[in-house]
Image 1 (cartoon, rainbow, N blue to C red):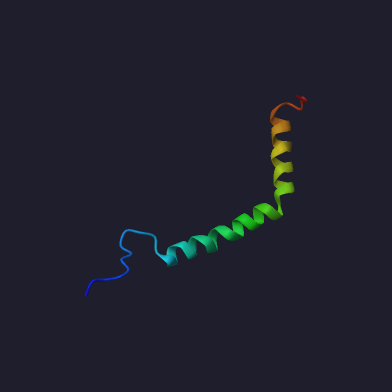
Image 2: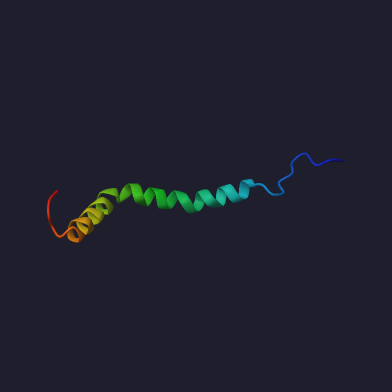
Length: 54
């Protein structure tokens, strides 16, 4: 009897769910702290630029 679902070589549902479990908290944290992250990058760029305003 042939197999109806062949998951050899492809992404299985478990792998997709595992990826989602890892990625979702990271995405949520980036969204929650986006203002702080943007401010941090802006301050680093400002310091690297020598403090000049372009």
